[in-house]
Length: 428
Image 1: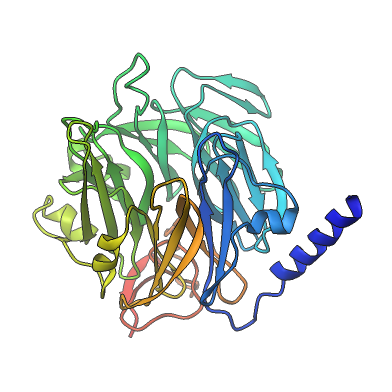
Image 2: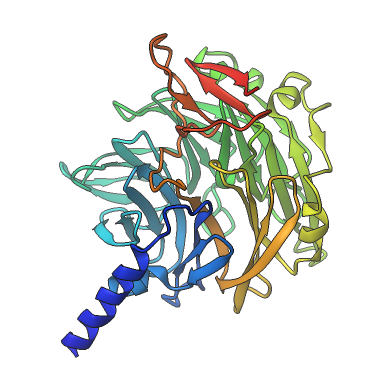
């Protein structure tokens, strides 16, 4: 049995490391599986084909765990994945090989990084750190050293914190209060701001909108935060946060704008806009109400929501999304501009990955696994940058170019927006 296992592992590693040098599309799709079923999986897509729908197991010989929730690039050869119901943060390299796993953050949710540390939100009430176990009344953010994989600190924020973003040394954390229907507290309406170095809570920005749920997207200084409402009488909404206004100490009401469209699944496009698919559900009617919008965050913020929101996406994307049984994710490859979406269908069978060109032409549909909800593109050259933007490099001698997701780029695309020395510009 051991000999057979080793043979399988050797073959799987050989498969994973035989990635073509000229590959342009390298995409990891994180399939959540079903809660408490221990059937989360990674799909690996490359240049028009699914290489594997159980990539982690192919490479490592065992399952990734129960209900993975998020995936980010930490360093060129280090990827972090939260596996919620297994209570681990799994670290792998770019070939899919397991590097380490951190087990001290129960009920973990979303991720951010500065390249040296990984920051994790948790619904839990305790966290094991190098200085002992910390206990909290509400939820918290944990800080993992990306060299040792140890939890070095944790700080309480709001109840059931979800999306988290890193910007100029600060962490922005969306609080949901999502257990309000079953626990003795109300829904949350705040975004907590922490100093990443000290892990001290600096302020809570009250958006007035409940249940700030799911992963947030980031475009430079702007954050796109979804609110599904309460699923009864309070409808969904989208909050656009200007992090610069927050850091400059402006009053809460000058730090955000609330839009009436929902952004259940959102991402950052190559031009700095947000693509958002809103899936509003009502227990009163039992129906879903969808919206498909492109949001210009600067215009939406400056106009207080009266401009910058359009019911349009490139090519046939909206038309294709409307044909899905249940849209479950949208993503733009920050290296190439190719666009991806997923259909979870009935949530209990394998889903479908859609691929569009940057212009929105449907290129193909591919079978993946159950509840494909999260994505990570790898650098076509075999190197990957940091997915959480710092965007504070102002050294005039530094020629490094970043896209709007804060990732270093080697080649710019004409007409797209980039950042150099902290200044946005359009590539000519």
